[in-house]
Image 1 (cartoon, protein in one colour):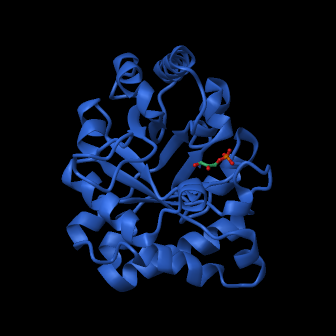
Image 2: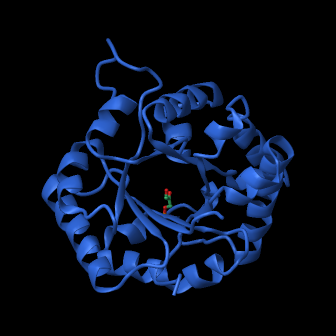
Length: 251
Ligand code: 13P
């Protein structure tokens, strides 16, 4: 059966020292209190090796926030999936709405990035989600369906390694969380889209995380929904105590 997961996405925050301290604090808090879910911190490329050195892998797994769609070569400034893997990372966030919006990442590119991640034994945390206009004009189910379908040339075996994160763009960093009912409806929709393509077993085994202004005060209600298998956490992942408060929602 699918795993419950709480994953932090630090985005472009923390210096190296601050990041190592944060990772250390998360690790220490988890040592004192065993989590009832998998815990992942996704950190800037520059921090991966140092953060990996302070995390105990049985307590906290590590991921990157992006990787290149190319394997290697003359792509100045890019970081490949094999480079990410070589730091000790197990996960990589792909298709975050900030990458789609500000860096123009599209479905074709995201499929190539996903293939690179899988070829290098990294589990993609693949983000989908509609913008406010799409929520308001009622097209959100179709929008998210087509984002998930971008991966449908993967084999069932490949797809079963994917974690989906539903992050409505209007809820990211705005303090405006989707209601637990809105999240549940979309997660059930996503699971059905996966089931129609890959069958019930793959769909039932896919972890679907919610992201967007998730905090200790609302996590429990969101995670109580049957198709919400945890969260992808931005702002609240930057304070170890808040992140721990969200992890403890799986009490
Ligand atoms: P916030 O939790 O800050 O809204 O960010 C969510 C997010 O984008 C995680 O990837």
